[in-house]
Image 1 (cartoon, rainbow, N blue to C red):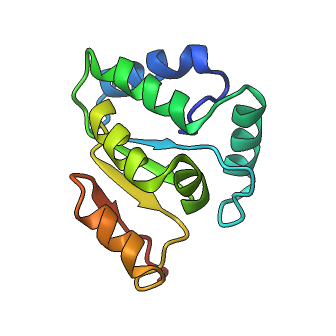
Image 2: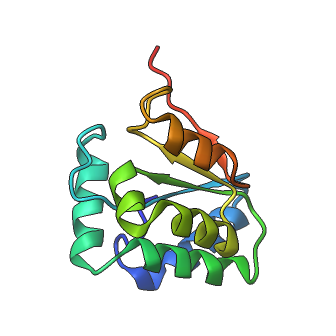
Image 3: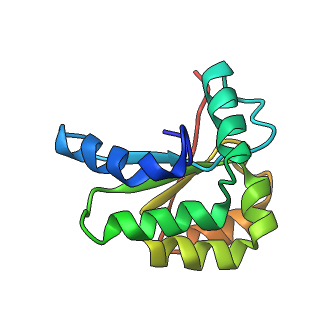
Length: 133
C-alpha cells in the first residue's frame, strides 16, 4: 500500500488491520512524483499521498510508530530518487531504526550502480529485485 494514502491518519490502523487478517508481510510504498514503472493505481495513490504531505521521513516515522506494537515484516517499496534525495546512508540507517526489513527498488537494475547496490547490500535491509519474465 502507498504510504500516506488515502491520508496519514489511516496509515497505522491499515497496517494493523492487514496483520490482524493474516498478512505475513507488508509492503509500504514510498510515494514518488514520477512512478512511470507503475500502473494508474499506484500513480494516483502516490500523487494523492504527496499532495497530503507524505515524505520519506513521514513514512519512516509512521513505520516506527507501527513497530511499537507489531513485528510483521515490512518491505519499503521505492524508486531510487527519493532515497538519494534523503541521503542513501541516512535512509538506510533511519529505515533500519524504524523497523524496515527490506527495500524493493523498482529502478535499480543489477549492475546499474555497483556502489549504491553495495551500500544497500551491506546494510541490514534485504535488497529485493524485480525481474521481468
